[in-house]
Length: 574
Ligand code: PEP
Ligand code: MG
Image 1: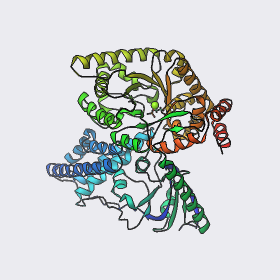
Image 2 (image 1 turned 180 degrees about the vertical axis):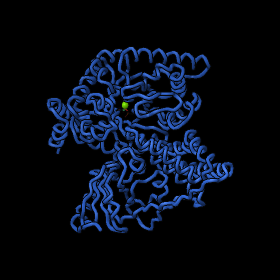
Image 3 (image 1 turned 60 degrees about the vertical axis):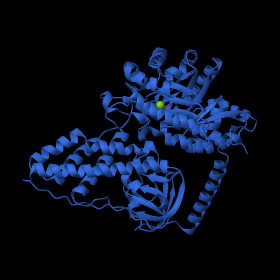
Image 4 (image 1 turned 90 degrees about the vertical axis):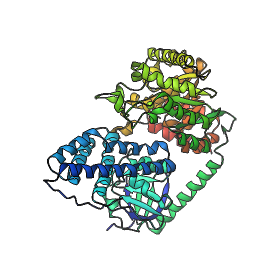
């Protein structure tokens, strides 16, 4: 039993506050028959049938998630489909079947082997995929055992879902209108519970430890997705204080949303551009609803991930058309493929690298594969005809890379025109500033491009030498660190001296404490996840440019990120 009003600390995985009765998702353990001397042909046939049925189930789930959460989130299920036909998994299962093992046991052993390998990988994003393999594995097992669906959690009233960890298919099988929040014992910020709850707009705290599983069914739980806290069995006073905070937060969010489509103008009349980071056409629709004035970062990886062959020019064109059509004449900054790092593509043979974030990724890889790269460039130039298309190259670290990329862009344009296609005209060409070498030489780079978009996520990672997916060094990764801020200042000044515009598309652009500092440094374009737009606009409207300039000037003299955050809080305009 839990003692009254106990607070558990976890990881803030999706923002927001929620209070309600706990619905505890208990796992049903399947008992798996293990027989030797089975007929391999019969067992293989049973397994094939089960995999086929599960393939159809997964396709259905994919459709559901695409509707409820968006294309990028639905892509999780493409990976699930791939596990079903994974050759190494199937080979291992076949070997066991050949030895006379029954289908359930052979499949289970192969899944556990595969999931165990993934779980032991040092990269948390990859190791988190073990949960996906087990999710698919369980589905096939249930089908083999004649239990056609995963046991659902039948919710009767709005509830806070409590579980050890949630597989994506479990998360989406819930009736969304009855889910108030998620609390899980395991999982990190990149777990699927975290990703899906952010997309669904539901608060979530993950990694709360096993104590959360002791909460009694129906007991009241307070979930603080902003601070990463769950309060069990709150007393009357905590409940009231929490409800009051929730009420104020809702009121504030509603007021911000009501003005979301108005421009972001400071109190002294200075206007800045607020645009969105998107990864699909569903995101582009959301961006407009949230008040985006364009797209500041279209991450094109969604077209390339979770598949066995590269997308063709036509296939890419179809996807770019749909996004550009949604955005009409608004500016759309498309980032060329940023693969590598933590995003691997099976068909590109990226190979094993000891330090993938310092390796053969993004523009480095694209320049080494000109034909592959030009397929994307031609598709973009063709789709951009009649739109305000802007192209930017990720992970640039040298001037030679920019020059080579521009040559390939010119070739792609000639090739598309020679094939008789209309292409975009006057396309602005820019680079992401993510590597300190570019920030330091920003004055030289500024002569060769039309804009800079500062990727503060990677710029911080490379400046602080702190891998962005490693929780243990997360405390070093604050983009408000003066070492990063001074580079941002230098990049903005160098850009302006050369007459080009400068934006930020890393997380700092949507961080309420980062926004006034960036304003004061002279930034003109802020690009962020769509749901952050109404709040960022509200923050900008509270400041004058003069106040923000003073703030930035003081921030640049400080020596810690914490110091900068405290300064911003202390200087809030009344
Ligand atoms: C960045 O590095 O700040 C950025 C926006 O790119 P990504 O997060 O996709 O690496
Ligand atoms: Mg980046």
